[in-house]
Figure (spheres, rainbow, N blue to C red):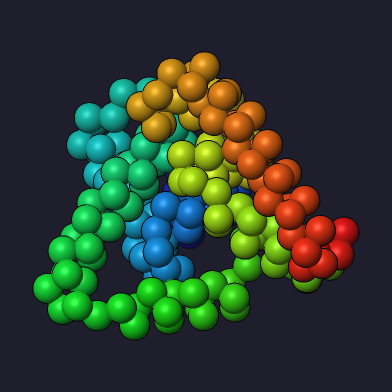
Length: 184
């Protein structure tokens, strides 16, 4: 039988893990990297809580995890880039693109798979500074202040990136529609 604290932790994870994973997925190159980065971020949070180093309660967990996921993803990306330069191996990028087709970002229930696929491609094509803010705002239910804190930017910058990102997404989807690639 688990303790009330463990049950509360499990409930919190069930509620927030999908949003955090989506953010991790946008920050990393592969599904597996996103899983690893999210797991490492959660372990860091648990270690801080157990060590009495974490300031703030349960409300501060999600912003901490967004910031930690971002830092870990950046570190992982740099490490991978160095390794790829040494190995001069580009096949990993091709595999990641193929793998993405089997792991959609959007819930598959009650929607058009083709439209969902186009939205995913359009969102992935945006500059990272826009897509990460859109994901945190729309799927992560974060305020601009929380997004700014997690990304180390002002809330005004977060709001502008959100607006510019939505405009770019709209343009990208409009272009896809005019090309006949999108059926919405």
